[in-house]
Amino acid sequence: MTVTRVGMVVHGGRPEAAEAARTVRDWCAGHGVACTDIDVWADGGRHSAREEVAAAGDPDLVVTLGGDGTFLRGARLAAAVDALVLGVDLGRVGFLTEVPMATVRAALDAVHGDRVEVEQRMLLTMRASRRLEVPSDMEALMRYGRGPLLPPTSVRPDCETSGEWGVPLDVAALNDVVLEKLARDRQVSVGVYLAGRLLASYSADALLVATPTGSTAYSFAAGGPVVSPRAEMLVFTPVAPHMTFDRSVVAAPDEPVGLRVLERSGRAAVSIDGQLRGVLDPGDWIGVYAAPRRLRVARLGPMDFYGRLRERMNLTDAPAAVADGMPAPLWPHTSPPPGDLAHLAMPHAPSPAGRERASRPSEGDGGSAG
Image (cartoon, helix red, strand yellow):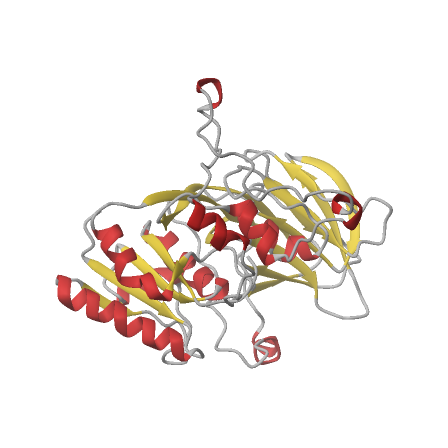
């Protein structure tokens, strides 16, 4: 693609992020590319994604400099205008960012020269019985020392609104949508529907719907499955439910998940990718489903998700499995797959130097899991 406008989302608390930002600005200046910092908290105001990207001149490339939390902020912006997003890795535990700080210029050259792979990531969107808003008396309490909350969700003008099917909300979640209790001593009671059918009524601390990308974030911490980010599915996971059935349920991408707050429940907070977006009362509901659009992520090569999973989660081999012999090789294949397997996603083995690097302990790189 030809890059003409770059928007940067920078982790303000990391000096290395500021240094990487200078590198991006220098590259843009040398290539005649407009470059604008996008900071949702710059003026203490509350801005929607569309307002932020409009103020930045509608960038066609969003560069995030930080960990996975910074990437999620950039993804929200990029999804609003179908921009490509490039994540520079300055985090510690993340799964989303890829580009090391030392190769920022080379990565921008690759994007500008159309030498990157564009990965499509599934997003979630929502309908609800009403627009999501945070009551004014709760806003200061829920900030937890962070910047101002995002503005109330807007209604998508291109979708039909009806009483039975609710209000179409202009939101895009890369990780998850979470419905959780507000009072410590009172769980939420929620009827959970999959593909329009009642699964069960839950009493729980929270209930969440995650994308494959979000399966390694809150859903994983709650005991949910790890899912390949290339998959297409919705993962429903209850958090601390008071019932025997406490497992995750995996739904097809065309099967929506409905969450209805029941009559005797406490109030419930709705968070989208970790950002509080509204409070529901008994009788309110939300419907979570796969968005028709995808997030476009720039990759310099195929992502080694399972190698990264082993590294970031510090997976170790069972002592009983390796006590009397050699451990399993990190790269079991040393040649390309045969013709009947050529359609499978099987990465070729790296060079001997690459295998040596893969066997070394990781130094870690920052950011939240996602």
